[in-house]
Every structure is written in C-alpha cells, then in structure tokens.
Length: 214
Image (cartoon, rainbow, N blue to C red; front, side, top):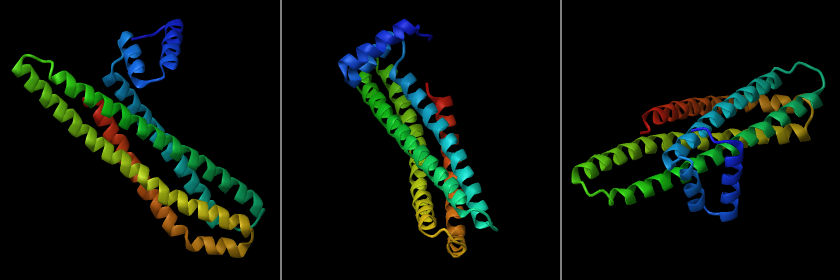
C-alpha cells in the first residue's frame, strides 16, 4: 500500500507525539500496515545490511592481503587505508546489530499479539489451524534468529583482530612490524571466511522466512 507524503508526515508526527510502540503499531495499522508487514520489512532490512557488511569485510580482507604483500612505499598510506576499512567495518557491524535487535523486537511483538488473538477465535477448528500456523511461523523464525545471531557473533573476533592489527601498525610503522602482522594473517583471514559463510547462511534463511511469512 502506498502512503502519500502528507499522510506519512502525519503518521510520523503522531508516533513521535505518542512516544510508544503501541501508538506506533496502532498508527501503522490505520494505513493497513500490520505487525507481520513490519516484521517482514525488518527482516529484509537485516538481510540487506548483512549483504553490505559482507561486502565491506571482503574489501577489508583485500586490504589486509595487500598489506601482507607490501613490498615498499609509504607505510603511513597503507595504515590510513587499513584504518578506514576498520572504521567502515565497525560501523557496518553496528548497523547489523541494530537490525537484528529490530527483528527481535518486532518478532516478539507479533507473536505476543498472535497468541492473544488466538484466544478470541470462537471456532475450535479455526483456532487449531491458526495455532499451527503460529507454531510453524515461530519455528521458522527461530531458525532465522539462530542464523542471524551466529553471523552477528562471528563479527566480533574479526573486529578484535582487525583492531589489534590497526593499533599495532599505528605504533610501529616499519617493515619489521609488517613482518609481525603477517604471522597473524592466517587467523584473521580464516575468521573473515567463516564470517562470510555465516552471513551467507543468514541471508539464505532470511530469504526463506520472507517467502514463507503468511
């Protein structure tokens, strides 16, 4: 459903004035946007954020490989490039964490509402079918959530090692320092590869959940 700019402005104003999630949901429902739709949007946003983060970590890996193969030149420029990639990777990681928290919040609210509304069904057969649908949707969500968390948790070891290398290089801009960093190369490369694999799995789970969401 398309919302006009003016209507969207009024909706945002109402939400800001109310300052609570119940008012937000109520306002969105007036425009035909329900918790199911909002959760789907958050899952899509989390999936897309992971894609962006994955690309950033790939770029960082390329930068690290260039660093390990450094044969001469201005070390400070190498450091500056590495520091920029670390900052971008950190920002992307934080954006992924934020998106995962949003998915968790909207999923919890959706399932709470679904549970309450189940009790309002007077037909036992409809209530049974709806309960089964809820159970299946929750099962698919748990699978998605586990994949999201694995990918999220895989970022921290990479960022920790990345930070170590940036700080070490900052304090030791010389060929000997580079030699020391090369000894750590395999660890961070392996961790980035694992991270990318977890992200790809999480992205696939997000696509599956989006397709199956009723």
